[in-house]
Image (tube, rainbow, N blue to C red; front, side, top):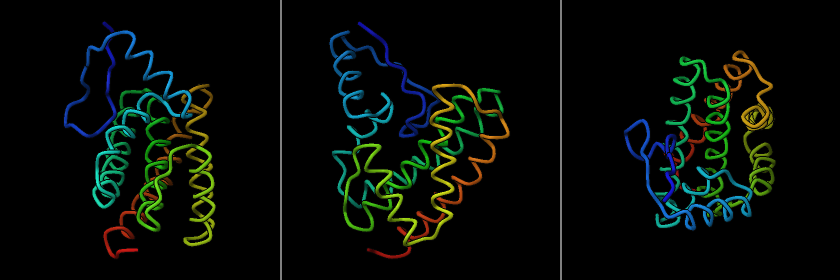
Length: 176
């Protein structure tokens, strides 16, 4: 048996949970996540979100994005720049997913699709979206490489917050 620590899902109001799964299942999940181009956490979130209807999924994407921003602030308070950076990336990615699902009922399932849809958002919302996206992607790299500093994450966090707020405003104010 292996433990998987699900600490940033935001779907439950506890800091983290530990789930014991057979090693073969963990290896399968890791392999499938890698094949999909997603982190383990992103992949598990997508598995959970599959069962939701589109309207529920849109709101969950936004709620989890907001939770991730809060968790990023907490990670910064604890001094964990890398974890904070990944949570900023996750929040921006979920905001893009929420917008795509809201705008045209399209589920984005890869990093390539996120980039493609970000370009559409730039056309609809303005060039500031690209800036946010580039900062967020820098945070994704920071998580793996550890190159960024606290001030980089703080800046990216503020920008990602703007994106999440704008997407939330759009999806809650009108139907596509």
